[in-house]
Image (cartoon, rainbow, N blue to C red):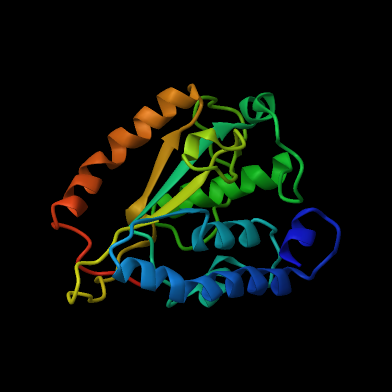
Length: 222
């Protein structure tokens, strides 16, 4: 049903499809928690913040950011979110853009604005568009990425990672503001350069997890 919606084969009311996306994440929550307990580090191509941003970007007056966020509370919370920010023209030049319902310039620009606002700690949608990375006057594009993240559609991407907990040491993180774990990465360079930049930004955290300095607890979405 979700795939058919994304391909525009079926129409669905905004609240209904948002809750279906959320239910899909909840369906995977137990498996995610089980893998984390077994010491597996998980890298997701989009997770709850993407669902929140895309639904809020529809500008439905009865589906604001707080409403979109409510069904996600209690899900395993990523330790880190990477938002790959790319100018729309560059995304189109890379190909594969426009095949899905949400891959429209205006929609993607609104999604980008919301992600940047969340990265700054905002809990409400921004009132005006923000300049995108690599183009001070252009609209940004937000989309999904393959693994590794830079080799995706060419649009800006979200890779959400959660570190494994140490055995017998699971406890809930203290609450954090929304944007504290979101890193915005300029994806306008080559795939190799973006990959290097991502690794530069996350290497210290990965080494801390490997050393047992992080990952002793798994947070939940607040």
